[in-house]
Image (cartoon, rainbow over all chains, first blue to last red):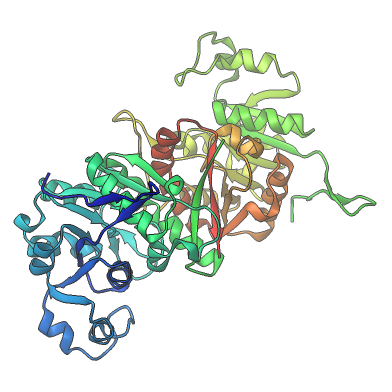
Length: 247
Length: 247
């Protein structure tokens, strides 16, 4: 296995995660939240973007109304800003936090060789805003973005996770009280274990990490988005999630 | 309003629901569970089917492996078996528990006039089993079965609910411990209130009934089905549900 999964057991038997090199692709809300949290947890983070010079030169809010990325990046000297390819090359684990509509293109720019053998955590949703809001899905039902990515990069070990909630809840699950669930879809058990450890680091308890099976199950978590959007309106806050309650 | 919503307040201020006439369309697992529970709660129930003589003559399990409907019906003399049209005519409230693929046809057989002005609780899912299991969806993303039904029967007051869980959990929410959620979608607030009262009768607490908004939000609860199917496999029981947890 190309990825060394660096876990040490302390004298008390608790899993202690050591610093990992992570390439986070995408500079939007989700990429920023994940990169900041990983850096805060001591990981070595490179945020990948299509054109570093261009994004760092921009001083206006982005298309979604986020403050300019350059401002965000300057406040976080512990996060390196790099091209998609550089960030992917540097990472032992790669996070796809690009917009779903452009994910395959962004990952192609990251480079097949830079993804080969690595765990690729896909948090993107294939949202289609071309007809306005609420968005529809670019792929669904008989396929999913997660599967498209796995097919396009067969040597990457794709794990779909975290796409079913707000960016802040992803990395700070304690923003929502009590138990609530995060889902894993992927064909590689070791890759899912690595993502599980990452999620544990974010604060997810083992009981709330639900393994849905192979990457095909990405269809379900991506098709959950329309319900999430309705719930977002109904509850009036992004700080919510669903919990799988069983008998 | 053509439907009298018969609620009485007892001396102790508790809402007491009086018997209601309900037409339950569909003789599968869901129709049986809802009809039996409504009858148990004292409602006057007619179960509607395409061809009464034909279904009562069958002595083999149905396509999904359920015991023959005739056997079920004979054990429940408090439930009347009727044609779609008779059941719809008799009901003050109609439940669409037919298979999603045939719902529009079944409702047409029930008769537009027999649905006009009435609350139509749609619990069906537009599942397509034509390519085997897991099923895909016949309608999704830019439309939903709930919306199709509302468009086809504009005088019916359609409320989508209960389609996000196992039939037994629908009518006995206490099969799953603690809090978990049921969703309402529909354009008519009075109709949603009537369904809310029905759900309260099944045992759903007010806090766990989540109003998602108009019938368009049926897209989300129908597109949740693939996730439900993955969760069904992951948790190993149908006795589960999701709970919306908010900050």
